[in-house]
Image 1 (cartoon, rainbow, N blue to C red):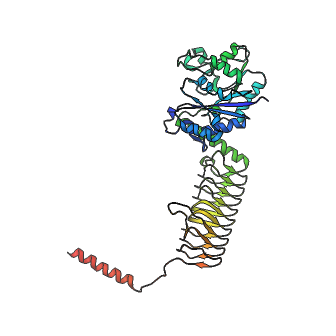
Image 2: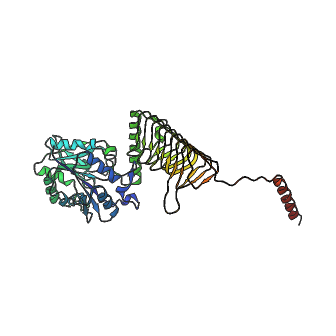
Image 3: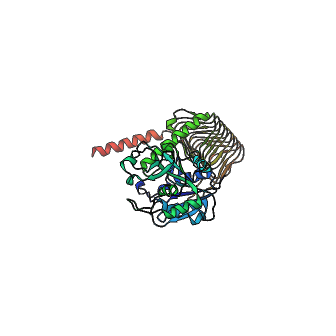
Amino acid sequence: MSARAAVILAAGQGTRMKSKTPKVLHKVGGRPLLDRMIDTVQATGCERIVVVVGTHSPEVRARVVDRLGEAAVAVQETPLGTAHAVLAARDALADFEGDVLITYADAPLLSPEDLQPLFALRANGADVALMAFEPVDPLLYGRVIKGADGHVIRIVEARDATPEEKAVKCCNAGMMVADRAKLFGWLARVGNDNVKQEYYLTDVVGLAVGDGGLVRAHSAPESAVMGCDTPLQLAQAEAIFQQRRRAHFLAEGVALMAPDTVHFSWDTKIAPGATVEQFVVFAPGVTVETGAVIRAFSHLEGAVVREGALIGPYARLRPGADIGEEAHIGNFVEVKKVAVGKGAKANHLAYLGDGTVGAGANIGAGTIFCNYDGFFKYDTHVGEGAFVGSNSSLVAPVTIGAGAYTGSGSTITADVAPDALALGRGRQVEKAGWAAEFRKAKSAEKAAKKGK
C-alpha cells in the first residue's frame, strides 16, 4: 500500500456562519468540525496531515498545533481559491512520497469508510480519484462530466456550466486523492480564467486528463459529504449524527425509552444492557456500564457510571464524577470530581464536589460539600457506611470517618472519627407560650395603627 498523507482545507472565513467562533471550530456531537476531520483522515491511515489555515483565524492555527504540532500548519495568506489553498501545503509535503488526500474541514459526517474507496481507485490505476455524489438540489455544485467509458473528463463549476452540463446529476464533493508529485505539478498549472477569477482545485481533473491520466469517481451518499457553512447546515449535520448514534446504541443492545429525545456526543460509550430514559444529554467523556439506568432529564459530562448504578431523574454528573456499582444519584443531585463507592446513595437535593464517598454511605437531602473558598478547591471524604444527615454542610477539607453520623442541619468543619456522631448546630431552646403572646401583641399594635 502506498504511503498516505492528507491536506485538510480550513482557511475559509466562514462568514455565513455569522459567528465569532471560526466555522471549523463549531461542533457536531460535541467535537469541533476540524477535529472530526483530523480523526477521520487519521483513521484512513494517513501518516502525514497538513491543515491549511487562513491568517484571519489564529484560533484554528492554535487548534492544529495542539493536535498535530507546528509542522502540520500551512498558511494561505490570500484566499485565491481551492487550488491556491492546496498549493500552500506543497512545502510541508516536499519530502513525502505517496498518495495525498485532499478534503475539507467542514464535512463532519465523512467517515473513513467513505474515503477508503478513493485510495482503492488509486491502487487500481486511477491517476486521480475523486468523491462524487448526487444531491437532491445540485444547483450550486460543480458537475462531474464523464465520457462514454464512464471515466471523468472534467469538472465544471456551476457558475461556468452550460445548460446541458447543469442537467448532469453527478456532482463534485470536493475530496480527491492523487500522487503527491503529480498533484502539485498539476496545481502549479491551474489558471484563473473563470467567472470568479479563482484557482479551482477541480481544474486538476482536466489537466490530468489532458496529460493522458485516468480520472475515476466514487459516489458517496449526500449526507456523508455535506458541508456546514451555515447554522442551519450545522443543525442538519447534528441531527444526522444523532440519528446515527441512536441507531448504533439500539443495535448494540442499549435500551432507549424515547430515542429521539436522547442526545449523544462523539465519544459516548454505553454498554449493552444499560437503560436510558427520556430527555438525557450525554456531553463528551461519558462511559456507562451494563445494567446502569440513566433516568429522565439527566445531564452527564466527563463521567463514569458503573454497573447497575441508578442516575436521576434530573441528575447532573460533571467531569470527574465516578459513580460506583449499584450506587444511586437521585433527583437534583450534582456530582463533580467525586468517586462514589459501591451502593452509596445520594437520592435528592445535594451537591457533591471534590472528594470521595465510601461504599454504602448515605448522603442526606440538602447536603453540600463546601469545596471552594474563592481561590482553591478542597476535598471532602465520606467513609464507608457513613450517614450524613439531611441539610448538612461539610466544609472542606474534612473527612467523615467510616460508619460515622452527622446530625441533620449540621455544619461540619473538623474531621469526624469513625463510628462517631458529630453535631454542628445550636442547641434548641423552647419558650413556652411565646408565640401566642407575640401574636397578641402584634395584633394590638396593628389595630392601634388602623385606628389613627
